[in-house]
Image (cartoon, rainbow over all chains, first blue to last red; front, side):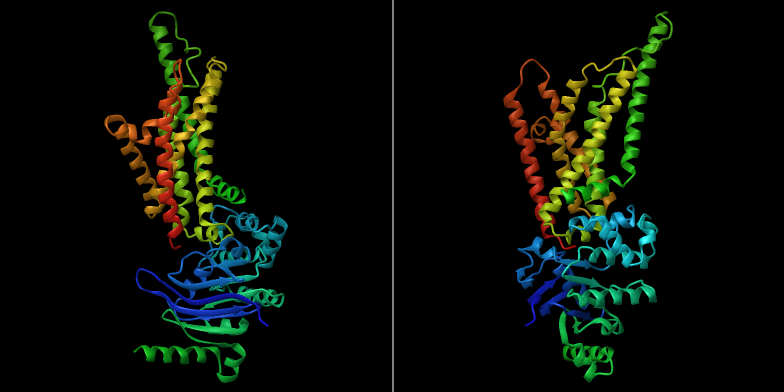
Length: 242
Length: 249
């Protein structure tokens, strides 16, 4: 039987501009690599921010590792690593100092931090100030910050943003390697081809709601590509809304 | 403690605080040199020859400037770096997605701002003491003035909570800093020029140590002023907590 890592039940979060998410019900099991696919403004980042405690829900229930995500925030967040939107990096600090800010909070020492810098290809820049980093290097540093605590659940929002081809392949390899060890992933992207390479399940979001959700193996059997699956569901939903 | 260490690492990585200490040292030096040269000229005018006044510099001299001008600006700057700047640069996300509650984050950032304030504040004391020693005054009153410096930390906490509150209300570090300074100036004006309001304004009690000057300790006055300071901290901190707890980042 699959163990539930995340359970969102009828979750609603609307911003002042009335955008956000409505009636989101979503289960993520241990070992899943769930892809959130949707156009800009469809609610992908809102779901991820909710799971990381950066925003508070208006209604519904969010359980993570069997615990209420808001009530047991500290316990839950010990098991969660995240990279939301642009990586949160302190420009005046070096790469290793930035990484150590997260590592210390999660009981990891400098040796382990260095291992993760090496894993994302930044070891030679460990003592260089982050303000000199390119977008791709910042993204890789952000990824190492999400992973350094060896979390059970990793939430990655557009993880390949700004990465070169080698970087994109590197991120994919890291996800596959950690997933084999049992790490659960929730990954968002608006690029279908990226998600279909790593995900075992995909949820398509449109206008703050889940338009469709399915196993990747089923999508592959019934559609020529994830892109086709996405477009069909988006058009269906758009037609229903018109 | 780990979260506090992180906040301090972030603050101390900014060189501007060292620049502030250097500027403060320059202010102290100019002030002492000015006094010494002035007394030397008086001595020359009295036909005693030009001599720089020995023992002119006192460790007590700069305490008012320190607690009323220098340290408030440093803590406003630190609070602006810890709150507004982090919110604007989006680095607050990395703090809030760690296994610590928002209440703990707020508390830790408050303590970090206080520590930064204290570092600059006591640096000024050390600079003044060095000047006193150089001018031949030795360690005269050094311990008593140190006690005065320690006592003046109490009202500093109120300034920090006021600034945090403003930083959570106003977007942008520069604007938050400016509004903190303006609010402080306005409250200081009230505490000096409005006799009706001044007993209830916390900026009236920044030089806390002055309460202890004299032969008897005014226990009732100290308690009532402590009440006003504690009340101000409680109100401002509670407002900050509610805002911080309920803001979406």
